[in-house]
Length: 208
Image (cartoon, rainbow, N blue to C red; front, side, top):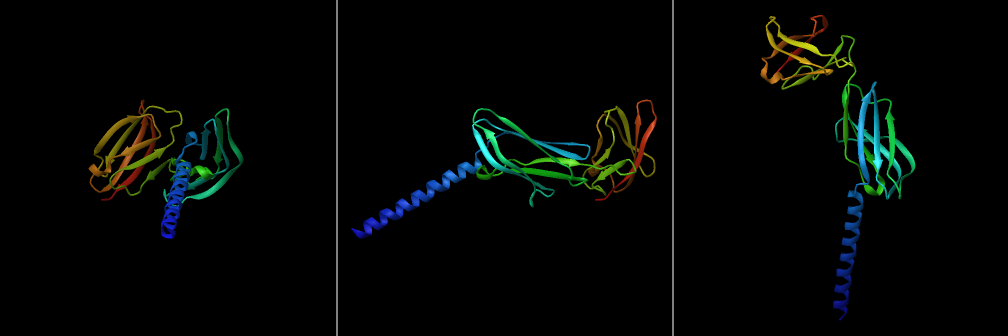
């Protein structure tokens, strides 16, 4: 009889622990956010998020990393967030993101766990007028430059001997280079407007 009672209480204890674990896991995985986004402008990162109606949280922490693994808290949005009756928006500005790197952000929502991770590049153009990532290039690379007005530009990539390897147009502020198709060595590039006026000249290295 005593063994039967002891076994019953053991089973009941396991069931209670299991239920508590499942409820905790559900709370941590339940998303209370309608959106979470990051935008770079002027070397700063503007974060915004929306807490869905019917949810509340306390002291939301903003975390950042550049390697996707080792996040650190950079700020706390103090106080109660959310509302039972309506969705509410919140924002935070990272005044000092890591330059020339991809900055990854997440929110610590307390009992609701962490938000999804958002990523944004922060590129600081060198005095030369462009920024290479990576340098040297292996399989692919990006050349960043200023083109705030989204002007239509002509891009030409040349080998060290002056042979044209590629030419195309762009209205963005970056050039994607498929360096896997290029022999190792030094290359130059030019960026001109559609009237032929040179706006930028630079060089990059391909190394396999």
